[in-house]
Length: 266
Image 1: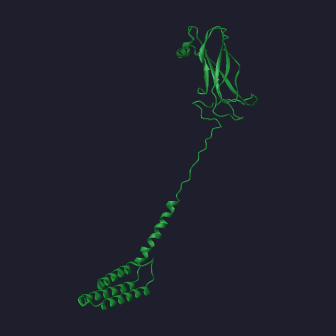
Image 2: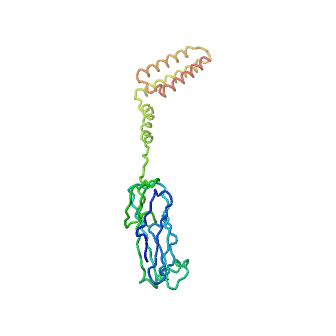
Image 3: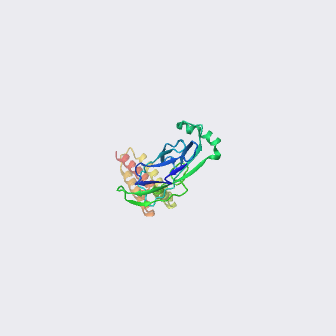
């Protein structure tokens, strides 16, 4: 079988369908069945891709190249190939049944099988038809399911987003700051404890005196209680520095003194 041209060449910008033709001629004296295969079946459409040729008969085949989504770079190299296989088919008359009978023909006439490879060239040009670059083929393929090569204009980079851990890093520090007042309050000096115990003893003494003088209506005990409370407060203030405001024992003492004064007056 004779194939013309010897190289399948496509021209254009390749962003739309492009069709080129091949001419097959049966140069033998026997009817031939042929089949067209390609390394990129998803990129090309061949019509017909299988048929019969009588002795001396010629047939034109259309090869349609699907358009690319983006323009091809000027240095793009096409690596696609076509394979045309022919077998004797003296008993086959229906060209539409070549595909379903191909395995039988191959088993019977395998020794007479003829295979021819056809290279593909891309001649990239602009919309005005001006030629920019002619590509050169190689034995590898691109685009189809068996290929591991993707068009070079596709972006294959992978971007990673940095993790943000600033909030978690500062949380332990905030916790330490919040715990400082409670830790300082727990570290009160023994002298402060003694002063508080003495103050509590004075309060109990004043309370007993108030019980004795409750009916007489005198306010001397109230004055004494106020003076004692003021003295105790001054003593605590002199012996201890304030820690983040009024400490809990002093606050309780002030509440108790206010209660006693209110009880005496009213």
